[in-house]
Amino acid sequence: MLTLSRRELEVSDLPEVKDSKARVMVKIFGEDYVVKGPVTREYIEMLAAYVDKRMRQISQRNPQLSGAKVAVLTALNLADELVKLQEDYDSLIKLIEEEKGK
Image (cartoon, rainbow, N blue to C red; front, side, top):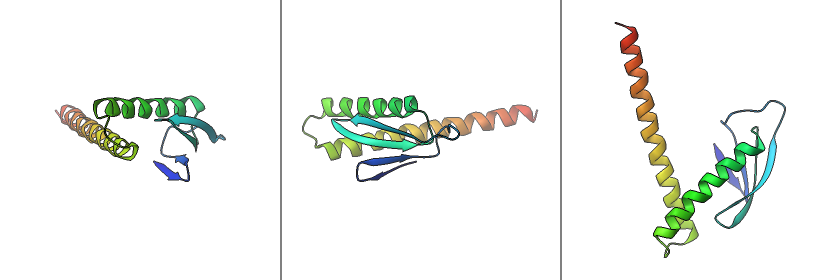
């Protein structure tokens, strides 16, 4: 889960790195953020690069949108992907359980 507090994001519920709380400066859609959490620097940078890429794709297709609207549209697209992946995962688990029961 990511929370935003004055340009500082907290990363939790992600792959943990014991005894470490990475604090990384990243740039997303032209804005600098300090992201911290119990994960590796590389993982935080990978997440930031992915979000930045997705925001830029949306902005290129819709250049009239403000940064805030690009962020919301990006969040909705990522949420849609997450829900679809969760549904696929649930279907696969159900299929595996049915096969085990045979």
